[in-house]
Length: 377
Image 1 (cartoon, rainbow, N blue to C red):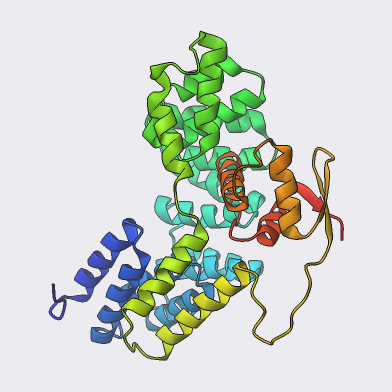
Image 2: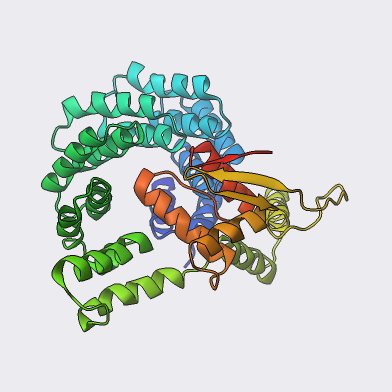
């Protein structure tokens, strides 16, 4: 269907539909077309910025938000997006100044803006700042389940398990279908040696609402231990089917290769920017697959030494270390990518923080930054 006669708002709405469906490439295409028609549209510039963020193209995202603010210095979503982009480059003070613009504009109590800011701070490990933002919002929005859950995750990250459980219980009371918060609460109860409480929470989560294999396996384990249900009981069929679905999901390399293949199959000249994007994708994939760097230098895999929080030591290349971790977990048959993806899901569910699993080096260094292990070079 042609889009030549759409208004800027209609372009934005169409892009939002693609964005919400996770089709960021199509959203990007729609926004580019819209900006050709309406180059001064702040709405489309901000939409393009957030699509870039979703694609982890933070440098381009920053340019989009800066352009939007040139057009309208009081566009609050652009300030939030710019702050989020700056955080990705470690420019914390500048990011906080951007977020401070929201408060100066009298929007400190805006729930959606505040949640976006708080979550951005949380993702970058700035838990104290995130807690302050969520706590300030709580006074104005005491009935927000999402806010209570976000505050619970943050309190847990700061070591306040009692406060975290209290906030998560409040969240699921406010919204019984906030399944992510309920699963998180079940993990905290399990860690507190309350298996019956953990099972009671998991029993209220439908199998299709689980997005991590840990919670599914834990439900099966607790149900067999506490209620005496046999592991091969047909009762568990929906949970095992969901496990199979999650294990079958394509990994990051599959997605990247599919994107590059699609770009080549539909090759059209969209200008220098599109060419740069494709080049960046290819460079990233070459790094992931261990190909020589672009300057032609080649190096043998360096030996590294990693010590886990439990005291286990693994040595060798990054791949060797992850393989050792996998084998020590009794899962030598699964691929390294599947092992890292499973571990990343578990960490994300427990802490809310994302761990890259496109390479062993990125996976281990992220774990070190989170304090889960120590790299002894």
